[in-house]
Length: 397
Ligand SMILES: *Cc1c(COP(=O)(O)O)cnc(C)c1O
Image (cartoon, rainbow, N blue to C red):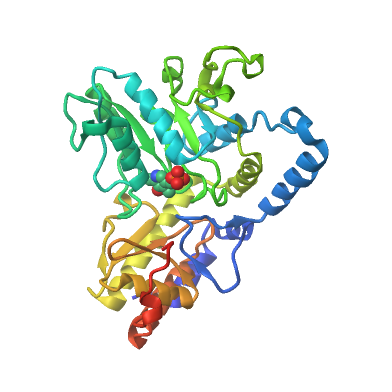
């Protein structure tokens, strides 16, 4: 069985070890919730300060041109695109994942009017399921049939961490004449994604998880070049107009990816995201994936060694079938997570009985994995999790 020194040795030879210094991680805290809200990159406070003080405070309205506000959704979109294998001109950063899902799902269905059903897994993220239900009504499908025109799928499942084969599923869907709308919320920045290489149609994702864009950071939307000209999304706002300042009587969509935009972008949040992306400068996603696999594998191995079957693995056992987080199930998952937080290990609880641990390879260390399992062992041995205070559920879990 590995010991703590083994974990320290792995950190000493980790090619990404230096990247941790690009983040502010509170002293002594083991933060394993970067899959929900990524940590703060060190350059973000100054970038936001500059946007507020100089650009807003002094340059005022001129900033739309002089400070690049106008181009920000496309400029930052192209930077995000580089992380998901999208050539320039196919990604914009705007709105929330939920809103972008709605826009692209309605647009995709309009490209397949004769096949109105939408396929989505019953265990996909709630907002994805709700948007599909709201758009497709009674035509929600659970398996691929001739009536299905669009599939909505998360690349990595938010609970189990199961990683789907993006290229394989896209090719199979295309063979059946079906379009695919991928949700990359749990894979962008942590699993290599090659949207163009896979011949993908559409994708959406948030940017506040592994991309560290900050709370409520705007999401992104990808539309492959070949679909852009025919794309008609339902939120026909003035910012997606071909000539926004013509103030024309009727809507005419902008050429290219710009037609996915709806209204005025959140500039301060975009500035935070743009600065946050610097954390990826010079970072190889192959290294990120290799470390991610090693971190989750070490965690699973240590949990099995220490606890036998007291915790069961609720994520795929095969490393290549997993994203970057691991779920364990235990009937007392909720109070155990609270007790771990009190010991400085922040993971989260997911219904109904899951402890979820996200390992963000840019700042999570091998020794954090070791110490997490060690503190979990202390929590279980002492029984300290078994209190009324830890069992009391907070509004946000
Ligand atoms: C986090 C996440 C979202 C978040 O959607 P918001 O509109 O940002 O609230 C959507 N889908 C998936 C799969 C997610 O993991």
